[in-house]
Image (cartoon, rainbow over all chains, first blue to last red; front, top):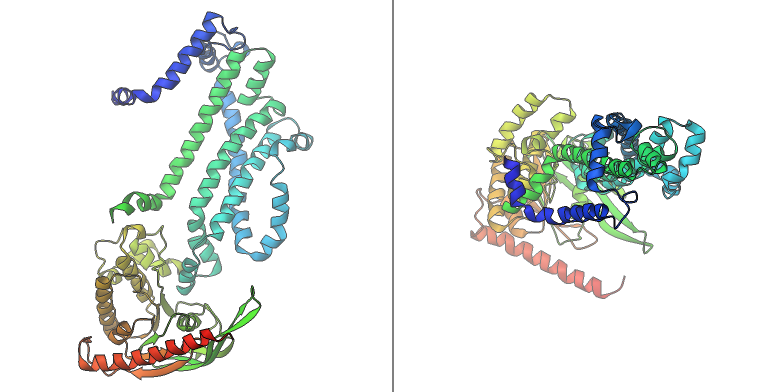
Length: 271
Length: 262
């Protein structure tokens, strides 16, 4: 019942979305807008329910198939994102820490960075065919650069005296990187990881529209060809929800790992 | 048995932006015997912190040698403890984890580190704050953690770079008293950089007064004062008057130098 109370207390937050939904529903039902162009929210919900639970065949061949589509997309996001996160952090630390690595690698990286990941689609299809691999490759491209840039920034701004203090306690270079530089750069790395998860979803969906035959992006584009805009909207909402969910998971992880930072902001005022 | 020897130290900084060379330390020689508490006193920019950083191994002299116990300094190391002007604690580690950081580097397990940290936590009067994070500490408490961290290494030499400069007057006096009592218990050689005459006279067994840039040792004064030091006693004020006169002379010279373009 607690959520009902909080719903009641925060009623003002829901005024705008509820009003928009009602207006949308009214607009579609009254025939002012043809339902084929903008299906009513209720229609979207019915179709979405069938897509998920196989209720009334309103989503046709997709009925009951939602979980497979969602898993296919999530798997691609996860694979590309994991590769990007690990390699971005490792390469970022290397570039920021060793001057000669920066000199030799950074110009190339900076040349590749402005190339939109989407423009790699033709090459990705030629190299990897139509399957998971081109999608994972695109997700990697989209997620890699935010992680890399933020890691470099985080490492470069580590307080030099922390490094000196560790060296004074006998830390070797590898220990300084592991016990000082990495933890000190984590806040910055995490902000990179959060930007990257957004790009990851964007690129999965894009890749699925052109280079893969499964997943939420594929259903979205396929439904467009069949003029099923209710399914298009259901797919959009699904992507939004999954994107929100993954970002929330990263936020949870961040709150656990960076708990020392919270004490800095919350309790710092009490002194 | 840890004595520090600075021999004919000269430091020239190359100002790359302006293409100039700046002589900051000019032929300094200084020997500090073991168990001495020496205060390097001088105006800002006289090179006293640079000298300390050379003993720490962060900076190298342009010419001359620095050695501790007869061994030349090649870089930072755990044989010397360092306390910085800012406490420079790892913000993601708790008080006890910061104090026992050096033991983590040598691969000691958590229980060993926790047990080893406790006596030092008690020594700097932070009992009860073991699990606090640095952001939750006051400036004085953070500096105590920094001191405990240096003491845990059990170094024969402790280097301190104006560690109390950022503290309020009351806390500063407390910390000075505690530092002296810790030094009296533990022994060891302390090199303490400060720009406060009172601080130097309260803490040191000797005071090295430095000149304005380029830094030289103007006078090395052995303090013959009973502890606890009484900053209102005639002897204390006699030393203070003498040192202040030296400093006044130096700042006058610095002004003349500044007036004439080099």
